[in-house]
Length: 250
Image 1 (cartoon, rainbow, N blue to C red):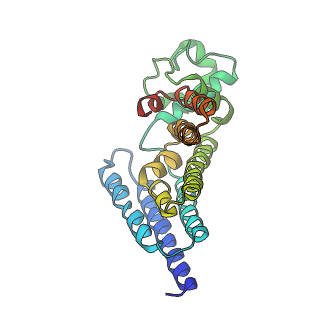
Image 2 (image 1 turned 120 degrees about the vertical axis):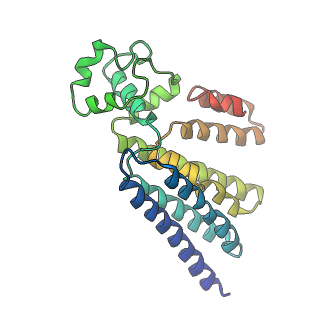
Image 3 (image 1 turned 90 degrees about the vertical axis):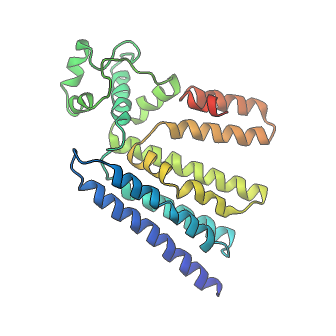
């Protein structure tokens, strides 16, 4: 197959990958709040087959073409899903609440969302709806300081926060691609992050702060490889101060 034909086939595969997620998004947007999510979760898992097809289909592309089609597909899917209501998790509402509480000069560690002293904050739109959707509103926040700083500056609105998490998610994929190139490894490996259903759902729909912690941790691991101990220790500390999970993974 000629180089142009190989690229055209790869782009077609990428369009089909994005289109299949568009079909999935259309289905879940029509879902009634009382309907079970099992079928849609299973469908998302099945969409992981695109990673295998991409792994095979992109094997004869140049490094630049591989990087382009994988990142185009990753970005396209995430942009499509930004319009989907976060049905799979309610953590997003806690992020928004913690951010607004801080912007009002109040510590989210000292007052749970249900505290009556915060009623005046909740009387303003859209914070009343945000407060109603918080899980365990009778408990103060559990998120560490770096996460709280990110909430304060970026969690003004659900779409803004999710957009920031998508950028961080794509940055992890780009960082992986950079490292694969530097090590002379197969660039197609980045597809297993960029096209995997879990990062897609966690960033574009859930907007989970885990992604910020993972970006710090991934960068820390690269600096460990480069024997830059201080930078790796600093980044690992930032990861742990965002979420405790990276410490366990490390």
